[in-house]
Image (cartoon, rainbow, N blue to C red):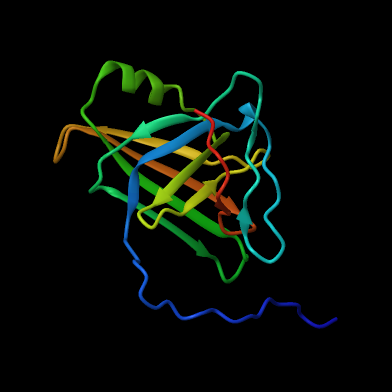
Length: 165
């Protein structure tokens, strides 16, 4: 049986902005609070249908530092799995934030990050959530280093639907 692969034209980018980094808001929810994430459109890797939430459940906004954030997703050539990592810094150690982050256990979350070009990416899935790791620190900056990781058979989908807050 011959190998199957995807091939196609990738257009040249001319005269468009290509800004690095993420916007300052991340959208986070427990995977159990979602009833459906539609499949991406044919040959697009873009989910355009709104994510369906459990009644009364919504995404939560996390505000973070504009200077200390990153997104990367890399395909392992041996396993074919995509390893995605989002790093953010939430300034100022304080009780309410620690309470929220202290309750982030396991790998049962879905988040949406937006880059400075306005493109949303879905990190996590209902049956394969992302993991949230937190480090509190007072030096060199006071706050929380948050690392979100996800391993999947596909790169995170782009998302053009609404986000329920």
